Length: 378
Image (cartoon, rainbow, N blue to C red; front, top):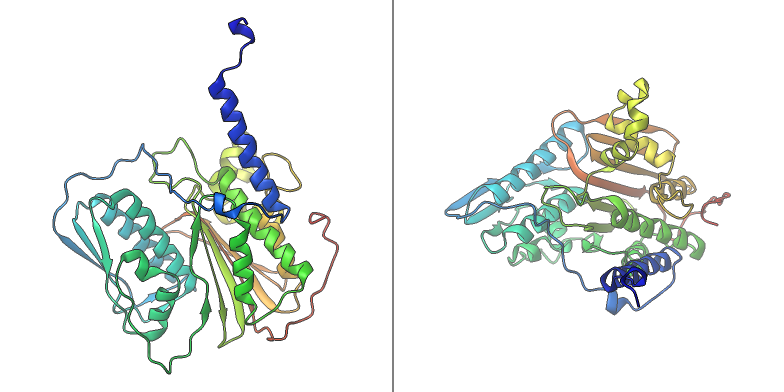
């Protein structure tokens, strides 16, 4: 057989792998099951182009502020500043030991905890043989519970403090991190919600599909393979909660990639260069466009619709809720009233995209759902 008519075995095997991975993701989006044990192996993929500082010595104490949240513009700036300081200190500081001192933290939200933990885990992947990352214990029980439930102490390798027997806990799911589409994690999150609200089968499936679509979007285009940044390729984090105190449920989904605005502007670069109006758009404009007008580089009705599905599902509930997306310097919150609140960050930007979805004041026995025509859900 001539060389001209013979296919390269490596190329042929590469096509087999691509086809197999595509099949897994398609099955997940269609809410079908497969061998989860075979797919659950998780090995973070570091960017070999990024080099950490060499020889290290000494201890550095990084003190956390009293309040960590995204409740206001100043809160967002303070949290992002802390995360950037933490990243620079660990990756570039040449310290043998880093102490994350959060004993004075009096208030922390789940999304703030997710961002901090994900940054710790990223830094550990690059510096685990060079720098020890440890921490202190907060004095406030609510902060202790949150950090314990999401796996913060486990990530630092320290023992979690005990809470008083009289303390009334919220219900959390631990922060999950993966680098593949995993529908079972979406199921476990929805199961967490059942303590406060039980979704009908049809709505459970719609929420499930939207979550899987978010995972698939990260897999497809969240990370830049040509970048020199300290990426964990295709990595994403997911955490949820059901709060007994105010009958609310919610989840946070995060990836540390390029961020929605950067992704869109790169794909639409030629169109933007020809439009004076688009050249003036802020990151918040691009975030809002991504939510209201799904973007898929494959022009598929089944891909690139995760945020739109989440918003549409939220709009169909007879309760107060919101969908908030923070990416780069854009911050947009979509309310069930139909309004949206935009904020353009001026001091620091977020690495990647953070999605926050929540419902407030629901009744434990459930509320009626307004079902409308959803042609994209089939």
